[in-house]
Image 1 (cartoon, rainbow, N blue to C red):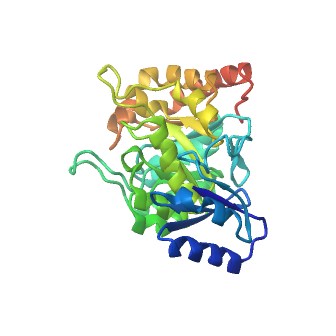
Image 2: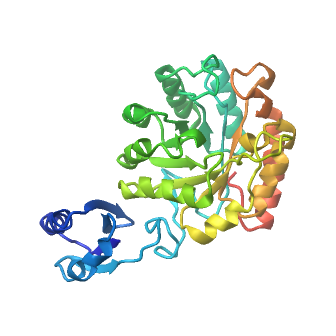
Image 3: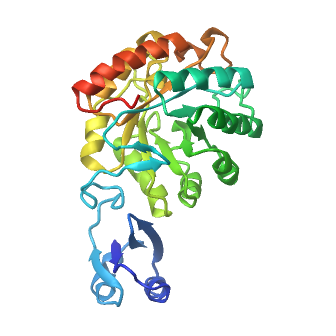
Amino acid sequence: MIAVLERGCSVKVKADIVRFIEGAGFRAQVSEAEGENFIGVVGAGAEALAERLGAMPGVREVHPAAAPYPLVSRRRHPEPTRVKVDEVIVGGGRLEVIAGPCAVESRDQLMAVATAVAAAGARLLRGGAFKPRTSPYSFQGLGEEGLELLAEARARTGLKVVTEVVAPEDVELVARHADVLQIGARNMQNFRLLSAVGGQPRAVLLKRGMMATIEELLLAAEYVVAAGNPRVILCERGIRTFERETRNTLDLSAVPALREKTHLPVIVDPSHAAGRREIVPDLARAAVAVGADGLMVEVHPDPDRALSDGRQSLTLEAFEKMMTELAEVARAVGRPLFR
């Protein structure tokens, strides 16, 4: 159950409402999104409080049968959300591209990629400083040194930095260096981490788990927004099926399905879906055609020698060629590429 508060509701009035809810044996979840304040009533039988809660000072309306993800639902917020990262706007009508290496390996590698993708039209730089890997013996990233290199690349190129955070205790550190905090597929249901990134002001890029449903992705986004951060970007990156020809199966139907269910912007990561660089441009074009707000693509100056995910990384030349092709598709579907 969700109580929507009057605009300008005082801290004292909010505290009175919280005390009432907790005094009745339920948990109160206070959140803010798009200038509105909400208090969720958590616990079985919460609907019994609806009438009394609705009569309290400061409560504008109560939704006893709220959707499982009311804050990110399009029913609650019909207009699409635009997530601003300084001058970059994801969900603003133009196609935004996030590009860069899977992992930050060295200064020379990162600067070469950043310079090239910026020249080709990308406005956000991806690069992993902390890398959760399936094998404990695989390259795990440079950690804080990688974050410092990403910040240096931003200063050189003007690209905004997108990088993954893998643990709640690292959120503050990553937020000091990054413009967008990424929650990877393996952490989509790490609820403590979701709440932690929801408690800081940086935009959050939330990747769909490899075996997660669309509803589970939206519930994960609800954790972030409920913790106070409405600046969430959803990312479809392929799901695990019986098919072994590609690394994952790109669920293109998720893009229009999510646009129907949520006001949050939706981007696509064709690199992790494909697992093979040869078909990344094809999937990227398809993602744009079905209405994605952006793309996240892995690029490396020498993919065959990459320390992480080289098989799915485009060369600098292939990325430039793909961006030229994408511009035509984007214009055709009314989502011009920002170049």
